[in-house]
Image 1 (cartoon, rainbow, N blue to C red):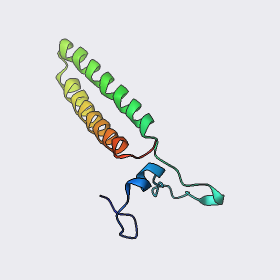
Image 2: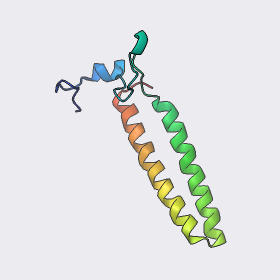
Image 3: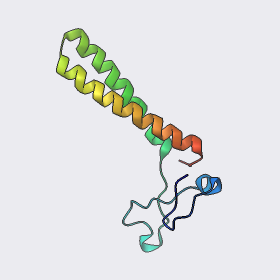
Length: 96
């Protein structure tokens, strides 16, 4: 299990409650609450990217444009990896 910034292991209850976004340099500025991850939005966007890359890759494969098929294959692979990781985080209990 991942650790927090104090070296302590996170509990499932902390994931259920949500984890603060430590990547936001303005988080907490002016009394604002820390941001939480929008995992559902990332799932939708990764799915759309994966489907579009696959469809365009098939189209360019029928047209014989090899470099585009390779580039879209790399993009589809990246989208699939991102989709799998975000689904893993969502199933682990993080909100969003």
